[in-house]
Length: 112
Image (cartoon, rainbow, N blue to C red):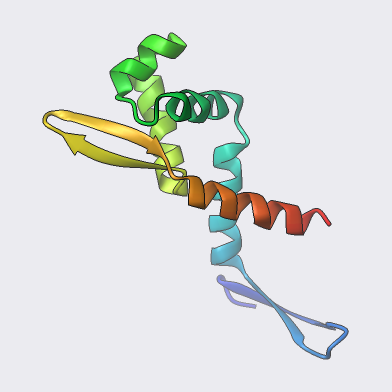
């Protein structure tokens, strides 16, 4: 066993060895954790309602401190759920729907 993977003695029904990639598992957990937070869910909904939004606008809409909003947006951005674009001196956040759809499909497959 290395720090990056676990290889099990048990094999699948097709005879394939089971190798668990711990780095990918850890990254996937961060993605799921990003969406499994009520405030981040509210932030995604607020962004979606306006198509794109600045941190200041988001703070006004959800009554948040700018530092709190920025921290949660950073988590959502790292997970790939929001994307940014710069217009002048402002950074606008928008929902990356394709990534959310992909995550939803994976979650559905895992819960079958």
